[in-house]
Length: 244
Image (cartoon, rainbow, N blue to C red; front, top):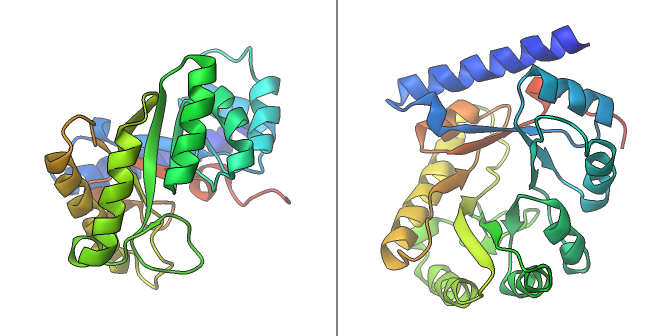
């Protein structure tokens, strides 16, 4: 199992390097987030031994169990929350995660800020954007990106409020592209997120806005071509999900 996992990981790293080179970028500018949801601690430990440094989890309670089981793991991986976060789980999320990708409302941001103040910590976050307009997806609703002026104006009001929260460190944006027949069909959505990020960086230089968390196993090359700095890869590294 360890050998197979190592081979899969190497194949994904080669894909990232090839996609970055094709886009005139450095592979070092693209962080691989290995999505370990539904996989047991032993498999996660094997991934870290194979070279994984960053792990993505969808559910707070599942992550809590793994982080507890793997607390002596060295080198210590960084843990990313990439799934929808309910406000009643925000306190635990602040305790567990190094970066939360899925901040999708002002109310959630305010709740995270309150719990981060209680723990006296700075909390790095990404703002999740629903750039496709799909009802099934979470995120600040900005279908079409910059060209949707009404939705963008609403987003700007929320962002100004979030940037005023003292403990939150906004580092960029995250999105989930729609399922498409060919990966290149996802590129307009990734491009729209990048354009949105670039405009926000001009408007609000007090935040870094470096990160674009976008792209998964099937569309990572398209995401990297459009500027992804983080790709979230599960199946291509760990194989099919374990039963939930």
